[in-house]
Amino acid sequence: MLYWLTALSDGGDFFNLFRYITFRAGGAFLTALFFGFIFGKPLINVLRRKQGKGQPIRDDGPESHMAKSGTPTMGGLLIVGAVLTSTMFWARLDNPFVWLVLFVTLSFGLIGFWDDYAKVSKQTVKGAPGKVRLALGVLVAALASYWASMYHPEALQFRLALPVFKDTLINLSFFFIPFAMFVIVGSANAVNLTDGLDGLAIMPVMIAAGTLGVIAYAVGRVDFTEYLDVHYVPGTGEILIFVAGLFGGGLGFLWYNAPPAAVFMGDTGSLALGGALGAIAVATKHEIVLAIVGGLFVVEALSVIIQVLYFKRTGKRVFLMAPIHHHFEKKGWAESQIVIRFWIIALILAMIGLATLKVR
Image (cartoon, rainbow, N blue to C red; front, side):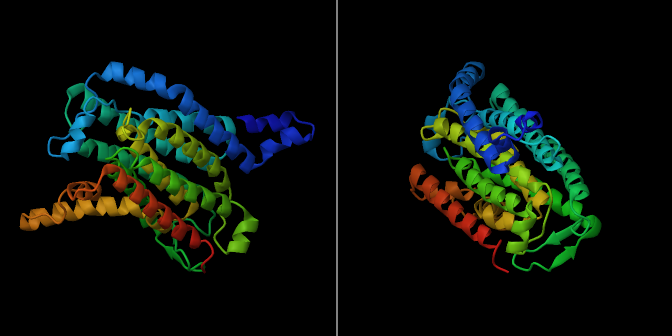
């Protein structure tokens, strides 16, 4: 919205700042950060008052988690609110990719909110019906995938770009839509599975989003794409505004989610943020790179899949408990050890993902 102030300027330096994505990204970051600090405590008080017993704790989970009983959930409302506010203020609202990412974020956030509400209102860990949640997620992803394809350059439409191999484009034709849907839905659910310890999911999400934000800015500038020898996708640079808001909102949330957490992100936040990562990857044609940057989420999801399939086949378990962060809890790792070490792994993977921009 503030971008349109440039139409009122007479060429002065102050108003010209709004023409720069990097300046507006800084504004989005600060707006979201202040949003989190200002509304964080009031929101937590409201959630605690409305939810009473808070989020139900699994009986079969690590014993240390029982001490978290009574902690309210739906803290993702703080992040989503911060991202929405900052993006609407600072982004160009005529950019289709901005609306695409917002659509996915808000839609998955609503699905997560429904699930969280079902859990706290019925005081059960089951929440909303899983098949219905999955069907809604698939529908949102289908719309987003087609949407993104329609705004990609003709040379990139319905094609899969591979990292490192710049000249290699795989024409998936119609099958690109199901592939992109898998990326978005898979990303949303992988982040959801990772959100099991205080602060575990939010920092890797911020790291992955920050990396994708840099990629979005780079592929949205023709001069950068020529230097880096990557595919040019006009308009994606504006996604950096959204990412900056996510980073600021994430820090604001982490202030209250740091151990011991005053509020849980819940499915409201984890599904919304995971879906956003997938949408950004699809928009920028970096779906494969997302698997590298978000490798931590991939491992968390795979640990659950492996555990379930192996148990059904043999009646035995590969991990002491899945997702894999619970496995390390069972092995005696302190929660803070797991969280910080997973943060380090996420940062390493992000650096590897960024390296794919230059390695050709």
